[in-house]
Image (cartoon, rainbow, N blue to C red; front, side, top):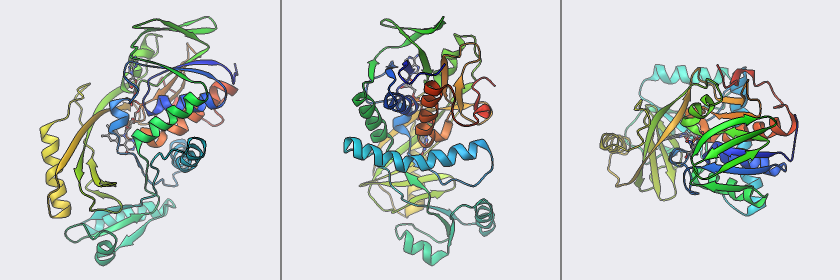
Length: 358
Ligand SMILES: Cc1cc2nc3c(=O)[nH]c(=O)nc-3n(C[C@H](O)[C@H](O)[C@H](O)COP(=O)(O)OP(=O)(O)OC[C@H]3O[C@@H](n4cnc5c(N)ncnc54)[C@H](O)[C@@H]3O)c2cc1C
């Protein structure tokens, strides 16, 4: 079935649900976004660092999705600026990875070069010129294609653009029951029963529980991530040290993120704050005041790849989840693909590797 003006219920107002709502509404679908939370957005999508990591030239469907998703951000930022006059905070900051072990630097440099990635070596002096705020020596690699978008602004602007195209939302409604009823999908929430031609389950780490109501096995688990903001602007680029990001954002620096297997516990911890404070001190050789800490639950799929596509026994219900550490990077491309899939009956690319039931 192919419908550009279909009615679609999108469950979940995180970055994936908002991106999907935006692309659906843009092509003429009647969209209702359902979320148990409030309009300011999901804790997970708000906690994201917004890093759009450089791509490599890997020859597989995930690498291609990653490349296309990365490229889409610049175009989307421009389109949204033209359409709404709004800035989503897309910035081609460039990224610097720091190394104290020359053999490790060599290995990462070779890996990226072999895959056609833009990467430059920075000796100690070049590193100091690029980032005078960093303390200590070592060498670095510079990745021109490390970009950043502000996840909070992106989510808000995508939703404003979807509303401009006629989308509406039901905030504070928890989805209890979902069923495919003949040629329609019915979703019962804490407030009422909604009915539409299609539904998209973009409920982050909770998506598996919703899909299970339709007899589908969609394997996801939450992995908590924490980040913290510090007052001060000592850096110019996205800097990575031992896997930790240090990101300039106006007059603040964001540091993150942890990866913790603690189920659905969303609370921030003192242990993570202490760790971040110590890492800031070791990176800069001085302390900065911590202003805010945030946590989110990344939806981690079984098998590593995102879960995107219709359910086998309920083909009017699509899953769009499991983006784990790259949900902001892959949100817009996921929304674009799902919208096309619903409108034209085909995703326009091979999505078999992303089948949600695997
Ligand atoms: C600390 C941290 C740093 C990160 N950094 C990056 C990064 O730099 N780059 C990047 O690309 N990604 C990053 N990520 C990952 C990214 O944030 C996630 O992949 C992404 O936000 C997931 O979005 P989502 O829309 O799938 O889920 P969510 O944001 O979790 O949204 C799901 C929504 O569904 C709603 N919901 C759930 N169940 C129901 C129900 N039954 N009824 C109604 N509503 C329901 C929830 O209220 C929520 O609003 C980071 C994540 C964290 C935590």
